[in-house]
Length: 209
Image 1 (cartoon, rainbow, N blue to C red):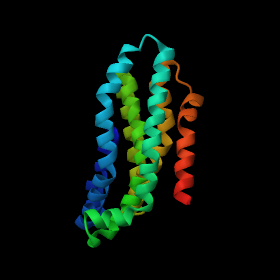
Image 2 (image 1 turned 60 degrees about the horizontal axis):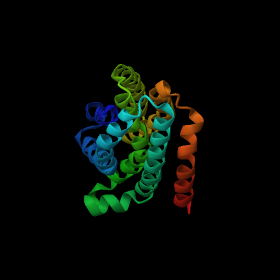
Image 3 (image 1 turned 90 degrees about the horizontal axis):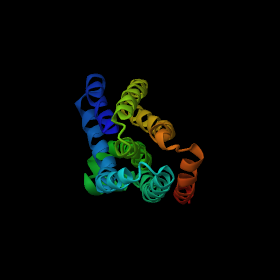
Image 4 (image 1 turned 120 degrees about the vertical axis):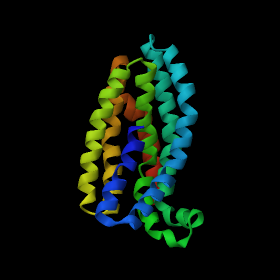
């Protein structure tokens, strides 16, 4: 939820500085970039939280189940990100029409964060299933502050700067947020990277090709 909030927060700032047209372009880019990720997140949340909650007293099994799920999310999410980045103009033209080419540019930057957004969101599954809503709240405050700073920096460049700042902040926060959320069950950075790197690398190579 913190990421959803932070993609919407710049709207007021964008409107004040760049006008209502830019708000429209940005809003539609956010909406399109979140369709796939929000659908997948809602589908996984209930099942994952229920299963992980049953394993909270068995850290080894908990980590194995979580990391397997993380690999599946990465397998699905990273190709979607690359597809959105490369095909942004075509996607926007099919859904919104040719008048929204500026939205396509913003969408390409936000779409690139879709896979990481899915991975980032699993930190909520960890906090909730471990019964640590207190830690979840602390992380949400930290993340909100970092996103706000990134957005203010990007705003100086323009609407595209806001999108790039948001995507950059998401990439930078993924590993720290999972390590913090997984600390109670001893989740290590090497385990996270092992679950992610193959799919990230494969999607990147496919996108380049």
